Image (cartoon, rainbow, N blue to C red; front, side, top):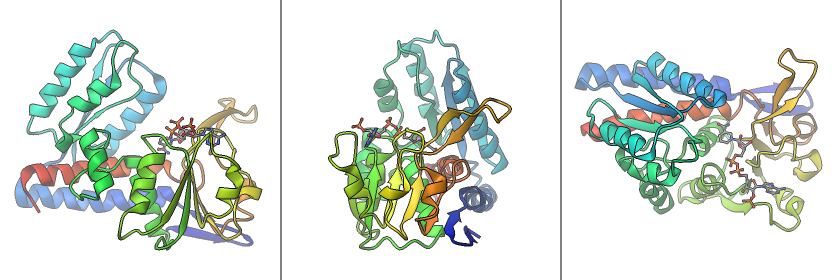
Length: 302
Ligand code: NAP
């Protein structure tokens, strides 16, 4: 079940359950690829330095790829790594036939130019979808490229929740290269057929835009920024935000909240993603999906 109906409140779009389903289907596909074609999809994640949040993400990426039957490895490099040293690691992974997906975890230490690194990854192995070739393919609508994992995950959430997009008014708040822009590019494709508005910090009268949205997607990075009065009754609300706020009632003293004021929004919306347990779990699931497709494409398996 993708959603849970509760009395008088919005349906919850259960990203954790949907992501589990995606991973289970991928595990079957990986097993078949190995049995029938001798191909084991391999994902290599490169972590430079010791940022604690990055370390958690990277651990989960390796764990979930191994659980899906894939080859998952993490290459850990010291914070003092030079750009040349990191590019040499990327070159080695580009040339390694066992590696189908390469991800360099951001942020990188300041002596390294992230764009130089992203451009060095072979586009065929760029499962994060940040190489300009893949960004271009996404815009053109070529299906052999890779879309960034978070917006790709939002598309799967909406599909599994049965949200109609053809002709729908979709409003995206945020225009980052990681979420907002690729989200809009996916929505506007022929076949999806949404009408898209992209808002940002310079947008005049933000609420006038958001109140028109049949589907409102918040990717802002400001805790509980979107309030109930900004949402059209009956809209579907997708909350991409992950913001840590102080909360003395929890053991850690902090709590994760989205960009949407969840309690208010769920009284107005028809369906909403929670934080955590909404968009978050989909991101790694889509990374695995991209890696399996990269393996197929590199091995010439249809
Ligand atoms: P970002 O690069 O900081 O972009 C934020 C965007 O929000 C910018 O385009 C910014 O506009 C816009 N914005 C900021 N304040 C605004 C305001 N007052 N009104 C309207 N727009 C405003 O962030 P991001 O990387 O896209 O991430 C957004 C959120 O999603 C963060 O909370 C992040 O942690 C989360 N996230 C979650 C996942 C996941 O897996 N669930 C993945 C990635 C990101 P300007 O361009 O004008 O500055």
